[in-house]
Image (cartoon, rainbow, N blue to C red; front, side):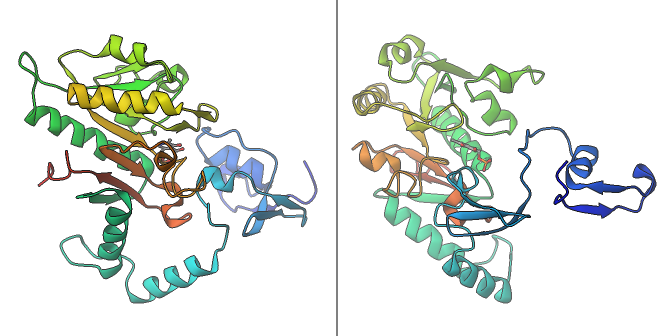
Length: 293
Ligand SMILES: Cc1ncc(COP(=O)(O)O)c(C=O)c1O
């Protein structure tokens, strides 16, 4: 191990008062869920990060699209400090001015008659979208059945909660977790026939990342998203766009869907919404904005 690695004594019986480096401590005390590279981050500013030996890197990851407006952004620091100095949290049973202002900004930016639900993460934003679709299906059943099925896509990623992992179209995330939550079925991105094959009288929504992130940077084609929109309109299905990774300026526009000329019924965002602080949002348009009461 490099000599520059953080070392510290963690004085407890579990490691026998031994001096351990950061990798050993992580290995001993964390669940083994991430394969980290051998890089200890000391500081970050704008698009750069520095390791503990002072080596500078251009950070193309931005925390996997979490710090899209740069690390230690001055405006974010100022706003966060000001808010923490007033109050960090009050119950949603009261009015918090910054929260209400954010909701207004997001609704206005998104689509007409939009309403917003705020949460703490992308997984929660997608959970909310799934629940919204479930209730939409409950209130708008087909002639022969309740509607609750959601068509998702192979190679997608929608989060680590039980519902969102079930909606994720990658087997490796499903291992050991079965039975998964009902009912998500998987089509192929850029193949409208594969979507049409899956639809039935229980289908209520289609959920897609306009540009798949975790699955490799795979954009949906413009014609495909348009066909998907038309198909959803035709079958009275909700079109849910997961823009948690590709939204908030990552493609140059605020939403990726702005480049597609397609408007979803629900869009979910998180990650860079607060540039690293935990925040998620589910924004619903006119078809389903009034569903939750
Ligand atoms: C497209 C997409 N959806 C959802 C999520 C889950 O977001 P979070 O990690 O904030 O729960 C991610 C996270 O990588 C993502 O890339």
